[in-house]
Length: 566
Image (cartoon, helix red, strand yellow):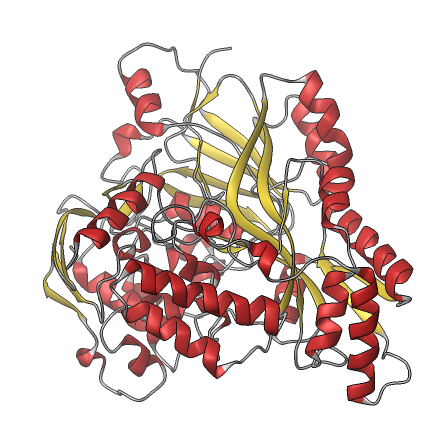
């Protein structure tokens, strides 16, 4: 696939560790975790080593209702989880994070050229064949400048030749973009540069195929009767604000590997209620990435249910973002003052209590660098340190530069969730104590919260990001000028250029240097957002639930899970 042994080594590492979102990559609604392996699980189930429960209905909770089931518009962990049930990309990821055949049964890679051979037994849920033209249709839909609202993850296709130019309107003819269906079952893709993680990226929901019946139908993604899908499950019930239900898709090409007949999802925001439901036997799994175990209950359930308690470090960062277009956070010194005035260790020790790691950078632990982990090769402690005296000094200087004798009123917004509220309360108390600044806290419903962030209708907002693929780029290119997920209002030409250089660089060490310099600009120089901690996923899982896969990024896959007799 690559032009050098180094890139071949990186690809091997990427495949071994695994890639893709959570989607997610996603903007997180909660912290999240579990373990599992679906190959061994399926083998055990198939070979009769375990006895399946008569009722193969999995019961889980989503702490927020997915805002959309349109793969082109999704951008959060809740939607990621459900879309993974209903759709399948060219490849999917197995329990080890390795790309395995999905809608494509095989592929050939020659430098920047990928040829995907689609399986002829893949069908849509209405019986239509899944063809290469469906992928071309879906990707054009993501990239089209006429798509409204604009697809937030369009930039994930910029690795494809002329994709960025078509998306920004420089090129008008989609036929010039490096993707075409040479016949019904052959998809040809040409990249701009060798991209070691592109294959894994095709398992991400933005690159899913979409049935062409959605054209000119604005309501297809909100009406279960109109959702024609190609994955293991179909959406059979959606009671807004209450529940979702998916049922096994008999048209799915690999239906014999699917053991669960149904996945029932309650929609409950309260972590305390979710935990109570789990204890009462009403849920088979609770906690991250789609729910929450209240932080004050973590030490209790860890002792009470040691065999069901699951904690896993993941490649994700929890942070507060500053709206650089809103007063007073247009000033970098004021942003730095707020970031330096909190105690991250106290937050993870006394508030979150799930083994999280204090964060001082954008790229979390577990992400690959040139030779080992990026975070090991480039310490985030070099960017800034917590220092109340220095924070006071910077705040005073920033206020003087802006002509403030008093800061404007400031509001911190977060989405519903007991954990988010506790963290926000603790941080607001630290700002009051250390800087003398009063910050109002406001919680918002998930959909409203996302829209306010996207519209830059906030001053400070809770946020989180988990890896879309195992590379520093996934934590950095979203902040490029004009990127679909850039809801900071951030723009720095030098930062943009460093990431463009990284995209085209084949030398891993030089590429790593570009990332390190870009992160230094983003955090040390600009403090575009305030890193707080690197995620862990905390969950509870019934002993008879097998085959749940949570990858290194925290994204969860229930499609090959099953229930055994208790």
